[in-house]
Length: 314
Image (cartoon, rainbow, N blue to C red; front, side):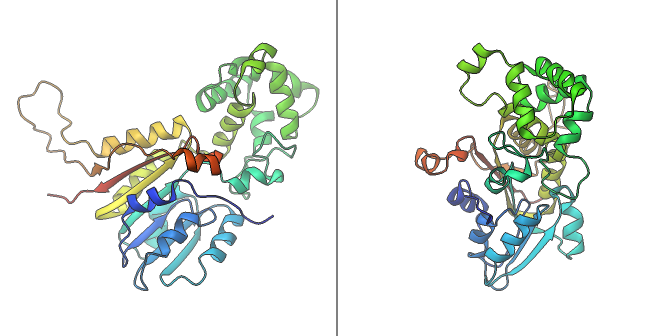
């Protein structure tokens, strides 16, 4: 199937980045290049777009979508945790904008064999980079019951984490849990019927989110990667971060706020003695999609866009 993905908050994202025609822009989560194409269309022949992604299908789609733009384009297979090294290898000292569009793409969800969806039966996988060794199958079958409980609780905020982990541990003693359908069946047996009937979403949603985050280390690398992107920004450069669930949004919000903080002296001192200067200026509150966008693209419902500007050193 073709790489189909609808970019979330497209106009708001481009406005937040304030694209300069001759600037250098880094898309840390290139995907199918929906946002990147909009950036590239605003760049001149002297501008430059650098796109990172670890998914080969996304990279192929991005190359096709970005063909013919006037600016220079560099597409690199890499996780955004390595963005500093990528920029160094490309001879780039600074960028004028950096974008993070987090989470899983529509293409990855809708391609059954990738194993991201609880709505389609497929082998347990969930790797964004399919060359990685750790897949959802190893997490579900090899992690201890206590480790599974922790993942479901911490990454999925799952109320029934302990019970689901226990059911999985019992089920895999009989035979391995091989497919998404197998995992969904176990989760549905673990969650009481009364809870399933009252639930708004699918009972497997939070567990699948938790396993995906564990497989791809999505939260472990985020804070440091945001700091690396801010370090790479030129004065006046912008960073834009789109999140889709509370855990990653909390990290984005906290990291950007820390970098926008000035004095870090202990409370009560009459004057500042730390000399700490803020690196960023926050650009308002988080943007959320309008109802019209959510109607067209329901997956945009939980999205939040946060943006900040790099301050010059005094």
